Image 1: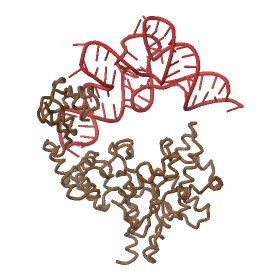
Image 2: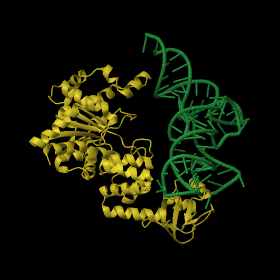
Image 3: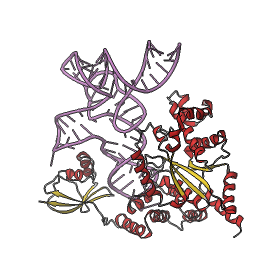
Image 4: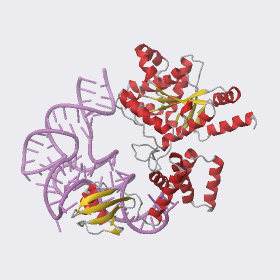
Length: 405
RNA sequence: GGUGAGUUACUCAAGCGGCCAACGAGGGCAGACUGUAAAUCUGCUGACUAUGUCUUCGAAGGUUCGAAUCCUUCACUCACCA
């Protein structure tokens, strides 16, 4: 293959799924330089030290970093331990509690374990921004704040809104983007990747690199935010609409299948390793009716489970799922509990964690949501006799109980 | 610092002395229909072995037979003025 062709192909992969790119020329030059002279460049992405549980939303970014690793990018995996003390004002987040050094280290270890499922550990550095921000000092901070003015800071959407409606904006929130931008200065960074919600902060890096006369001006790539399982909000742990990469194969599989058909295409674009062309063809097949939308979604689920576990477990997850929900069989793996004979069914359900309260349990019994050995229970006051049973709440909560006399 | 408005369940938001465990909407849970999809329809949505009891309407006191509703103090939020 011609060199130029290789370069074009690499750029195609790099740009895939990006929402917006700033300074595309710079990006192209870096990649070209890598192919021609084998010179690497740095790619920075920032992560919050408080959230070491990665979910698919994070992997959109990580997969993009992995792509860069293939084409000369050396990843600066930045853990914002210093900036976490302030809390990113982007969106609606509140002030966060400061973490101790130990907590940060523990979290970063956990990051490593998870991140290496996607990234090549040989081509990346994990860095902490406290390394240079601790040393910045008050005088350094004053210098930093000179490089930006309030009027421009207020141009940022969320600041503007809050300012106009008279809500409070603390000075520290103004400093946050500056510090994040300073990270790029300190790292002499070439490219930064972040979510679209980070646009302002990402561009700040460019601005400050220019201000500090670093002779560098990072290119910026913005990735769209992955919508969560509810199909409305961005995927986040606090909203509970996430798929964690450390979750069980069965759980991941089931969660992927529970998203809406429409949303599954978005997931295809951002998470699948299929080419855009292949995905477009799948879409056509579904529209024509030659491919059932559920099958398309099943394939996506299989692909995702395979990435974080393996193909065998993915297939098992599928057959398990089909068994339970298509054929109405019981799951092969259920939590098991031992109870005493004569226990009230509602109490039993609470004790084993299938219901939050006996009140809720009663309501569910009334509505026919509780099953014992797959038989609907209608008696609210039912007492369990000794023996072994499978208790079920709704369609997806199961438990095996052994009742002893 | 002054003046005024507000603080209600997961969220928004009614209620302004008894009919209030608190209208309505969203969310959530469950049932029907399905592909555990979407859409739609229905029910539920403080706790308690329960036609009753207990704890909730920013916090603490008070008035009253009776308070989310009235009074006092405190805390917080917002608006206008300085």
